Length: 205
Image (tube, rainbow, N blue to C red; front, side, top):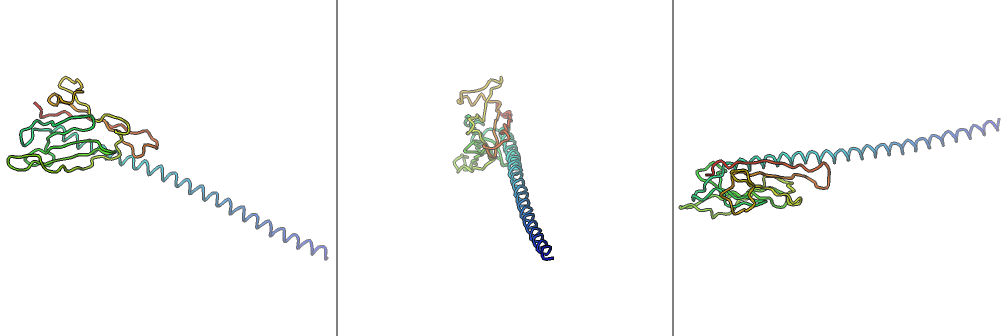
């Protein structure tokens, strides 16, 4: 009887030991599963955040380009009678155009600076009118990577469709194309988006 009683005690100890080991195994497995789930959530969150931000940047760029194209198309003679185009360049163009539906055209400058497409505007004032006020600058589109990618933003063409590379020939410009690279984070995929548009200057003669 003593021997049997002793064996039962040993058996009880063995059962309790096995239960403790099994509990530790389950805890470790739970921790691994929990960490895997958290890692997956973080990965998908980062991926979706980038996709959402990229889509927002593309939509913003499209709105900025659309606004710029509308204003370029309506380029017109200034309140002083000056020619509609003031200057042209690879990353900027300055024109006269009515952007706020008032009686006279504003002097408007579109340009790429840092990582954004911007618009500067100066109203005419005085009698006789003059464009001497401070330029009001606003951002049309962000995450524009033209400068980083050495991409020419504006190309100019004459009435025959021949590209103008001599930027003193502002009187010959009739058609403008716009190229923009948009990317929220250049270090991440997917590939950057290249956006294109164009504008015919309707009021030139």
